[in-house]
Length: 306
Image 1: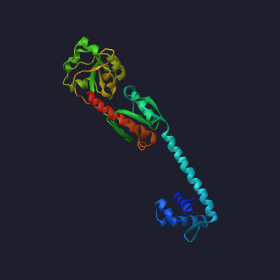
Image 2: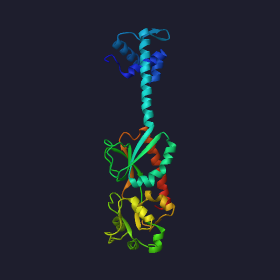
Image 3: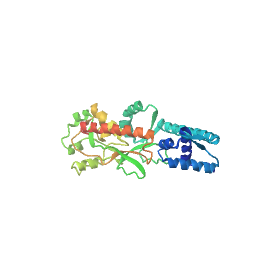
Image 4: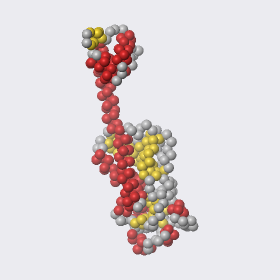
């Protein structure tokens, strides 16, 4: 192993053995002719035998030079094939994506067939979790999280911004009438969450709307956004929802948006992965796709006024 030279010198020998000309070798490797001569001379000193003999108009390999150059060519070809197989493996196979459950069900899953059609060699494995991902301990490649974008030591990219607004089933308006202002909503059954976490609360929405004395200590409570939304669709009350959860429901008329309060969500969705991995082939393919999907969705939210 002590007689193994630097890889650059071995590449110089392999190329020079093919061209039998230091000038053409230098052109191929994009270095100077004197650098090629120096590397060949270094190899001859390390190994203790001549690699080339000069002749008019070029070079000839010595028998030992011919033998060792073939060994090096095989080594370099094997290394190139191995590295290519690594890259191919990174382009294919499974991509493990961690999402919030409500975002997965309402936004990601309906769009995934489009990614599969574009990248049939990548299988997306979805897992759901509310907490931030520890990429060092968990088998996850990328994550999408709702928050302020402060994820130290991780690659972070803004994905989606949203508005927060109340919705209910059309049938509920037959019973309670159409609210004319935010205070009118206090006459409706409001669907609450056990733990609001990073999502906007009814209290915040009412305060933004100018109602500072809303009594919100009573009402039906649900553990997640999906359950609250389903309850709203079933006519059980008014849910406070986010844009990414409501696109299909509004387009299909299963719920209607109430009032025209332009309340921007205090949190946004972010694409997250380990720093330095954002351009790995599988991750970049998914990242480019999901950012393009988010851009289209953002335009659709503007069109729908959500």
